[in-house]
Length: 284
Ligand SMILES: [Fe+2]
Image 1 (cartoon, rainbow, N blue to C red):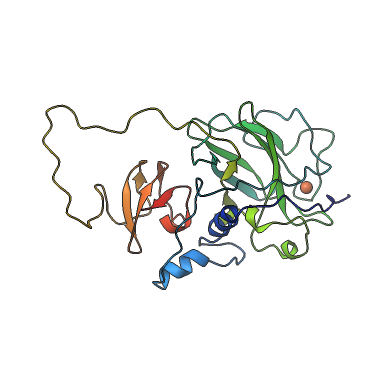
Image 2: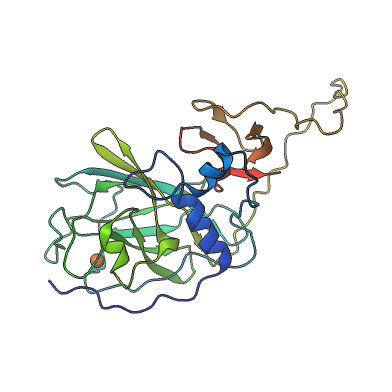
């Protein structure tokens, strides 16, 4: 099977590079990627300010479509077939850090043996982000084929906006070093989940999203005045970040001596510590 030809991807901003590096870093890591941010936290070293969507410039880099895309994939978020179970989840953001709803994500990939189904639609499917800008793909780990490292293909399109065609990659793959298309800015965060794999990746489209119009929570009428907050204390709702806790957007926690604000509601997991998941936590 012919390999995708090796075109260089488009130029990328420093923001995307830094974001990808952080996303690639969390532990427990599979296959030996370097835990950059977490290592710094554990050593008590200062961290660079966490870049996240809204940082200056940059969006998910484009990559070539390759020869195996087929239009009209089925609407489904689970791609059935035999292989090592893989889930990929995350958010699609606009460049202004607003999660984008109703974004089309059209995934296609090789089967466990490195073959693409060109007759049917095995391991092909499209879905849309939910109202919170989230997506989740359930599939298998794609096999290798000549000339390429392990990868997923995806096209994304916000409503009435241009299509972004790109690929995502797996950390620690030996062929990452020899595939000229490979781009570390497109590395997923991958960890073991039982006998399967669990990956996360956030896309940033060159689209300006519309911020939510609902006002923030306001105290009800006639409620007692809030207790003044002493200087230098954590914001209300603070506490030490803890795995297993469900956090709402706006909640604040402390971790590693720093304070973070939750920017997307979620249930915390080991490996999603605030310094290394800029899609979920903003350092304040
Ligand atoms: Fe491919």
